[in-house]
Length: 585
Image 1: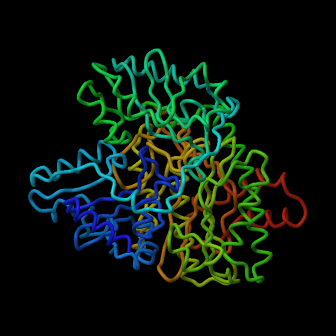
Image 2: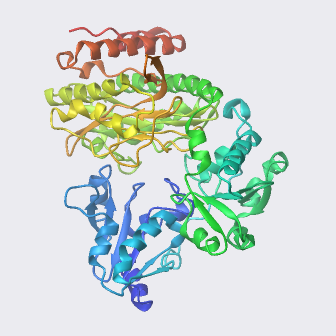
């Protein structure tokens, strides 16, 4: 067992506690296979979690999306589950603080910790005189480690991006000048990709290039695998100075007596340690993070067109699935069919994440993934959930539908309707300009809270443009930090009900923050939904909907029919018409 091998090394090196987070040197949400160390050690395949190992204990912390999945996957790896966010469960840093003894040694790989996380941890432990060392205990043990990706980088055309890389760099430099700093170092892959209009295939379904970037007053340096940038080198040579990825940490030694702007939540601790002693560090969010969160008019135009095309693919899939409901289709096979329908689009690049194709009880695991060797058959009864999205040159999509495959129980109809009520309440929300994203979360949850139901995740997340399907700084969640919502931010709306060993229900659309009206003393915003695919009429108990909710439902379905109907004819057009018909009591 790998856990025992790690403990043997810990004993040799006098390390009492060792932390393995789910990170790479760039703080990415989704990782290249090469960096999936926590998965290698614990067996847990989810996208979020932290492992802590001591001489006689081993725990995995993860959030409510993964409780069921994680418990199943770690059982043969020697780890116990800590249900993050549950009453009475300490987070991993508090647990370490409570259990580590005076003068002990804690080991971690500093490349996998942001400066902020490292600082917070060290502050909690300093009163116990704990020694924290930067050490890698995994590389030598992982004999068949995956290689780093080798696919070529490519440029995103300005007809999709809306702004040139020169324009974006100028915006960033102006803000750096206002902050009276000399330069910034950027390690976030999505921020580098957005700034330079460069995309790559280094993370599955997230088109980024593994790289570091330094922006100075008179030059921009990109550190990346030179083999992967050969195809675009001529086009970007006027914008950036190219250096090999392996040179980055050594190159940092060149900086002395500089004012350097860093994002403490993004830059890793090893980078910080290389420059902190000889330079003045000014902290703040990556400048590009706030710039890219507000989509420009060209991006919006592309996105709205993309979501129509994406909705066409999803509706074709639902029609196919319903017609073949009695043919014993497996979850994996069904998911592949949807992936193939998306891939017919000439602007398709890849999925935006692994399609979640989950029938019945499997859908209660929020991020369940069927495989060719392990899947359930979709039966002609109950619920089937599909959460999916695409990366297109014209934008990134994400949408979820819960589909009635046949007869439903009263409980299933009730819970679907309550989820729909939650979804519609947020979809229909009007809010003061500058409202914090956190304040909007309760609007969605209220309908479920009234029935003493809740979902253990956020209600919504920001989305990148041909970048990560989860992208901030904004989101709709009960958790801090709160961010003010601004016009042309894009965010998901995805409440749900999850009942272990029964079913999972999630309804997700993507929305844009838009202007609503100006009164004598206030300006109001609202949401414009840009996803287009019918809800499941068969699963709705209209007696649970208010008149306003019925009005919003019918208005949305009229728009769905208007947007999608030009792409269909014959029987599937008739089915679209039936699926979007007016709902009355």
